Image 1 (spheres, rainbow, N blue to C red):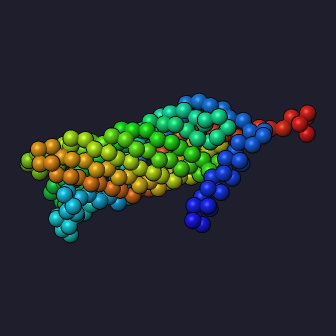
Image 2 (image 1 turned 45 degrees about the vertical axis):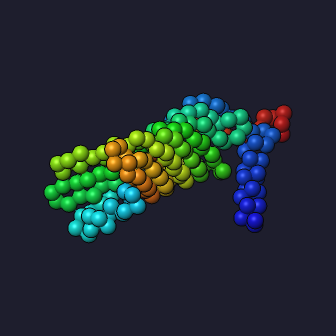
Image 3 (image 1 turned 90 degrees about the horizontal axis):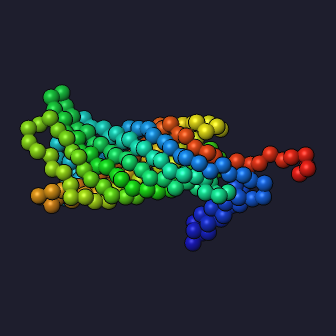
Length: 209
């Protein structure tokens, strides 16, 4: 209960700080794009693929994302966006590789609790597009759901800036023919270019002083 009260109080104070008298908002187009690298985990029917392949292979998680939308909404530092994003879990050795890929087509929100800190969350439809150079066929999916959330520092006071942050991605899909379930997640450090109109305080005129 104390945690809920704290979160509610934090959000209310954030809205008050941004939406008070004297604030101005310049609404317009929002866009960001970039990539990240870190860890990824894939399970097929509950079996961890990393354990299946053993310690003889290396692995890495990669991700990309592209968002476009509109904001801020009124005097609130809130943006409504659509997103195309994906995560890849690559297992490889000196000879071959296998990469499990999950994609997100959806929408979400971006919110600035303070001017330099961005929180974003998205959810949507998901597909897979797995790949390998080993002979055989990697099955695609019938479709599923995916979502992600991120926290990033926003550098730049003008419309052009960049984001440096941490993002968690999760997707679940049912594969064709076998009906196997592919669950994939990743935790990545990312960097993005961002074009945005930021909510800001209005400057006082001589009449206001």
